[in-house]
Length: 341
Image 1 (spheres, helix red, strand yellow):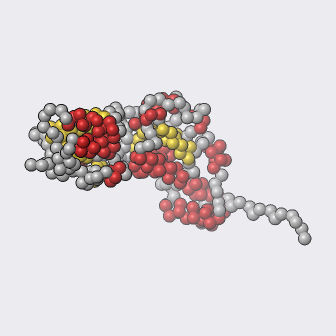
Image 2: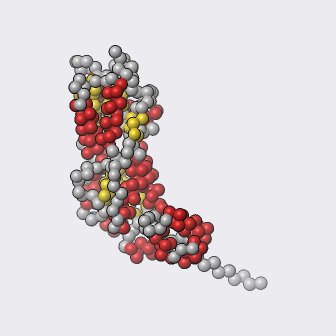
Image 3: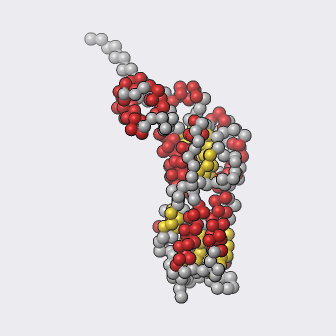
């Protein structure tokens, strides 16, 4: 009896997948190259993937990368890993990347701001493109000379440095919060604003003040604080202790500031929302962990990541990226109520 080992069965090829799916090899290449949208129906793309999985087919991404001159790697630059919003952005971007055989490297800016070292020996050689939050824009200094396609998230539409951008309708979110509080009868406001000087927070301030200007008896005072619970607590506590009538509502630039605001109100022996209403922005898990739960604005973070990766793929393929701001939604909870008479 021969002890010779049997040869391994041949690996399935794109031709095998095409034959099983009833399509051309070119269609298989489009599907696994991430270029099928607009050229191949979703049903056909699904059938190609299904037959490929049944056959055990794996595209040779290494050879394809050499042929196209691509590494199939995108860099996602965010201000900090501790922020839940950016973790969800990464989840969305990574999901789309995986569908197209790409990887996403997550790169947090040191301390949330300031320039960072090139994360690779040569960014141009190691990356196909960059997706970056405007809150970490200063960390892009080392990458700007690499001539990489750049997709900006939540950034100034007037900035032409990006090949594409993905924005949320932040102004509408702040208008929704302000109109909600005005509708409850509030007229004396404190804006607990982020001390981070970025476009997204400037938009929130403009939307808040613009909405209140249309109400003759509405008043607002701005107090700034770093994006930390303790800093928000201390800043608002000092503002509430100042001479003059107390505000009936505190509008916060995000949920972290709102959590600090709730603590400040209680430190002064007051109650949320009976004495002072508090609103947040982002709808992080924190919004339902505090008591009362926060009225806030829900931002579709995962969709931001998905759109960002889709935009980068479009730029790499020479296609226009999808336009239009992503909608946001007010979520009214227990931290806001009518002011006391």
